[in-house]
Length: 238
Image (tube, rainbow, N blue to C red):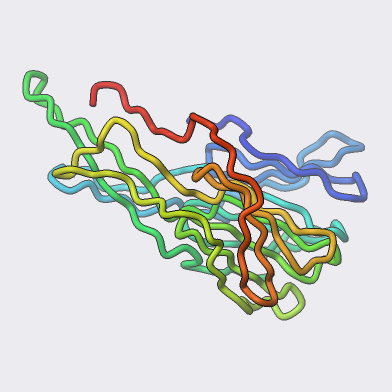
């Protein structure tokens, strides 16, 4: 990924557009003037990545997710560095940063190519924060992460008030001798949306289910189990 736009949101007052890109930047744009009002390059720093049995060490650079608050005065972003940032739009300042939200893991796998004297390697990240949403009244922000938890943030207090189990199935892949099998079933929380009552959220996951989570009681109920056939990661050459 070299910088394509991967996520977008429009403020409810229709004054702003915000984008997240695979170059790990977030951009705020004016709808009326069609100009870029701000570029946020350091909201997310990427994920520390060290590959065992190789000399590679660096950071992943995956695209952040972005969402406006209902009052169009702040936005939130999340990414593969396990952080959530809340940004004030008028001042372009970060109001709060929540670190280490996801407690997932990074699994390294590799395949040696002796003939070319190269080590081909990759990493399966299971600790992203992939989904965000504000409640309809703007009082709460929820995040769905790869550890299958839902984090609830009180926006007025800028404080994490709850961490709940989403009820989705495990996102553990099948690794044999640190070599990834051809098909890997995952359970990432890809989407999270508030219900109209602001007391429940709907989560969608790679385990092919939709669930409703009650934020007050922590109860999670299965809504739909759709037999999609596309929740496999297929790696060429394995």
